[in-house]
Each structure stands twice: as C-alpha cells, then as structure tokens.
Image (tube, rainbow, N blue to C red):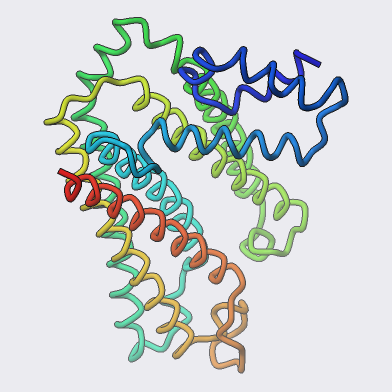
Length: 307
C-alpha cells in the first residue's frame, strides 16, 4: 500500500514532498485504512498535487510574491506558445495549396491573412528563442550547482521522444514518396493512420520539451533583471499569439467565403459547406492557448500592481 501511495506523491513538487511527504503518506494511509485507493481518490490527490505545483511556480495564489507571479505568468505564456505551435502546424497542413483552389480575384484577403499567420509564428518563436538565450547563463549556473539531477528526467524524456519522432518522420517521409497525391490525402487508410500517429508523437514531443523547460525554470535562481526581461518578452509573445489566432480565423472566413469546396477536397466551383472539423479543432487549440497566454499576462500584471 505504501509503495502505491508513494507513487501518488510524484504529483507534488519536490520541495513539498521533502517537507510534507511522510506526514502526507501517513494521512493517506489512515484515510484508506488499508483499502485500495479508488480512482476518484487518486484523481483528487493528483489535482491537489497539480495545485501545489501552481502555488510553487507562482501560477496561482494571491499570496505569491511579485517575482513568483512574474515567473508563473511567463511560464503560462510559454505553455500557451507550445499550444500555438501545435495549432499553427495543424493550420499549415490544412492550408496546403489553398491558393490554387481559390478564384484569382478573391485570393488576396486569404493570402494576406495566411502571411500574417506565418509572420506572427516566426516572430513569436524568435521571441521565445531570445528568452531562452537570455536564460543560458542562469541555466549554466544552475547545472554547475548540481541542478542536472533535478531536470535530467524531464530532459531525457523529451530527448527520447525527439529521437523516436525523427525516426518515425523519416519512415513516414520515405513511405509518402512512394504514394500518389490522392493516397497521401486520404486515399490510403493505413498511411492516414500512420500520419495521425506521427502527428500525435510530434504533439507529445512538444509537450515534453515544454515540460522540460518548465522544470528547468523551476530549478533556476532567476535574477530580478532577467525576470523583468522575460516578463516583457512574454507580453510580446502573447501579442504574437493574439495576432496569429485572429489571422487564422480571418483566413478560414476568407476561404469559406470564396472557396468552400477547398475544405471538402472537392473540385473548384462545387457546392460545399464551409464547415471544416479539422479547422474547428485547430481554432479551438489556438483560442485555448490564447486564453492561457492572456492569463499569463494578467498574472504578470498582477505582480506589478502588487508592488
């Protein structure tokens, strides 16, 4: 029983486990009275652990310091941008060759909107990269103080997923070269399943690298100067996320107005509905990510107002 309960402790921050772990295990053991922990009990403990992670990172909690709020808000924006990357990749796949399906006279609006999506994606990614570059000296100091043991599991998982993803994408690319355009776009069911599996692996890899970044930030002793710079970059990244999301929606509207058949894979001029389930899911991911980014900016701003 104790070993199973100890696994539940993994949901809690390391510092919390070291301080309260033994007492918490004894409390859980008494509450269960030797019985097996039901699913609802494990979910409750997991949610409580995630809430403690939120407090520890400064993402939630009215009593958090200004520095903790800035750190937590910046982390929220980082997580949000990871979601934007997933949504942007899905949009890029959905928008392949859209211009050729549209009347030339009606193409400008959609093309402009798509170009803005690409530009916002590039700018946001560069800003995230700049934030990472500014943090390099602090990361090096953290590693020299023995911080590698804390971040190693998260980084190792991300590296393993990246290696597996690279192999999977290489294999899928070789397979795709042997197929026709029709087969690559739904004509081959087995290829379609493999493509979805590789896409899911790519999303998982992005999530694992984001988790590794959050873990690394949690192990760092960030100076006030660096934290202010990262907070400013987080605000700029949020603006890029907003521009990207709005532009993606405009692109969908423009294509739906003038070439609804594009979303159904039908011939130009065919009567078709402008609804697209893949685009709806893509926009849902983008809007959810934008909401998280806005929450991060609000968290950063609350730290400034709390001064």
